[in-house]
Length: 112
Image (tube, rainbow, N blue to C red; front, side):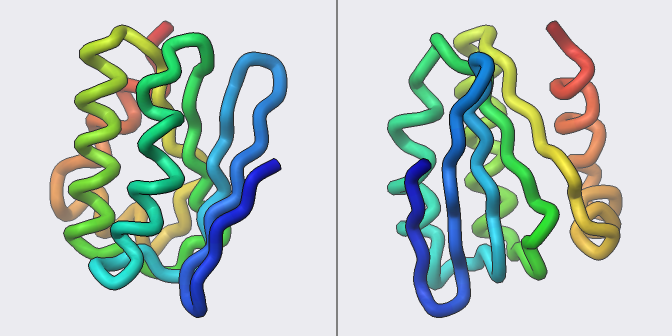
């Protein structure tokens, strides 16, 4: 299990049964985007593992965080490797719905 955290953002990875899950906690915004990218970069290109992001403890995400998620989705889709977003809190799901990106994560989660 790997952990990366700052004052307001925390990411922990756990791999089991062929799935690497990244657990996010706190606030994912421009100020921690570089930290999030550092955590995700080696995982995105690993075609041997399915990738999941668990947002159960994420309190806030801004357009920068959403942009990173979309770039991960695009990269994983291009490699034909599974990427899912799990346990999205209601306030973040509402933002995903309003911006129209919820359908991309939902359809990706149901593929494979």
